[in-house]
Length: 363
Ligand SMILES: C[S@@+](CC[C@H](N)C(=O)[O-])C[C@H]1O[C@@H](n2cnc3c(N)ncnc32)[C@H](O)[C@@H]1O
Image (cartoon, rainbow, N blue to C red):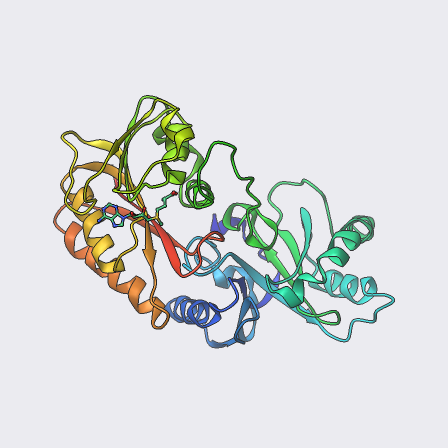
């Protein structure tokens, strides 16, 4: 993957989006990633702006960021890009010319253009402008040869309007970056699902699993357990794919979910109940201490009760990263003697004060 980073592009650092209010956590993650990779620079993050910038001491070839550009790695990043220009004092009447100059100055060609803003109420006032400006600006870029729409092997050009007069230009390789503008998947609420949290599991399937994993593990006939299932939004995601679901919760399940005929509802304690046979999936959305949930999931995976799990970890208001690290450490300790495993943790768009994680032993 790293071979596909644009070798001729001079990069000034990393640009990442997050939910407003999580800049501090994302900044700490970027700082650590960059330091581990031996980069020298500093991170800039303002509270509630919805984005974080890491700036290297001097511009470096994009290849210096090898291994750092996968947006799935930092938990709190919705999108992760290599920024190469910050254009200020954009005139209201002609924003295109200075932006075009900056793109041309980079000497880089791109496969797609995305105009976006951070995800804040203030910034979103510019989303109408972004929509209107995309097509004409893409045409100008195509004319100069900087944009070759659809050409494989080239990065996507992101233009992020921090304000009406300041924009950041960044490159992202399609296979390493979030496929959604602003890193936000626009998911439609499915008809039969009884709660909006159904969208969280749907997003988790798209974000935490590869396409092959989805095909292999989310298919008719497999068995799943949903701990803390009521009223059934997560269960619905599994049942509607043809999985047989044991839904564990003292609370009631929605009628439409039960009407699928794929669900057995057990009024039991999700912390102590165990299945008789190995199931493909255990999903867990019980609201409890994150360390308690992480230990429970690690136990299921370690003892072969389930092959894989997606679970929610509610975060404390302070020291959120520490809470995530504590869960990682608990899982590492429990699975150390069991075998190698995949643990992927993301702050999804549909998450608020929580993160969603995937855990499975590696084959
Ligand atoms: C956030 S809700 C789950 C929403 C569900 N995932 C959905 O999509 O509709 C949390 C649920 O966990 C359940 N719960 C909390 N502690 C539990 C326990 N010890 N055993 C079983 N269920 C529990 C609650 O009753 C509640 O219904």
